[in-house]
Amino acid sequence: MSSIKIKIKKETKDKIVEICNSFNNSPKELINILHKTQDFLGYLPAEAQEVIAEQVKVPTAKVYGIVSFYSFFTMIPKGKHPISVCMGTACYVRGAEKVLDEFKHLLNIKVGETDSAGKFSLASLRCVGACGLAPVALIGGKVYGRLAPDDIKKILSEYDDCECQR
Image (cartoon, rainbow, N blue to C red; front, side, top):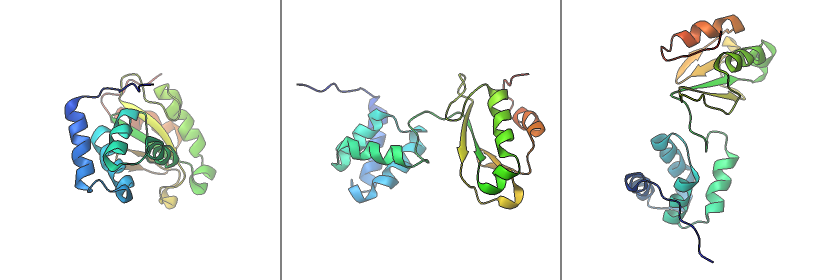
């Protein structure tokens, strides 16, 4: 039985190999390699996981297990402006669920999805450590605090490429 090789661009594979080499192809550095690869690609597709597994000489299932276990890794491409809404206790009791619902409504996507234009992706987090600003959302590296559902449309309008509902 022969296995089917999934093809990725040579330059992409070369960059992943270079990342692995920068960590001496050490299985002990697998999480660091995955972080660096995700920084490069924006996500960790199966093809990239296979290259990494081959380079560090571990089963692909082990790489997949790590990627699927840790929430900071994703196998789905993120949008240009990744949005994360904190659902930790302080944020939740101060209305984070309604804030999240407004993002979903305006962007017409669910948690874990990216809009069709690739502009926004939506995630929820357990805690971002900004409890005094609850409820909190992150867009890219920018923190928005003390949010109410009515704030979301204005916030999204800061991103000139937003094609929001309503």
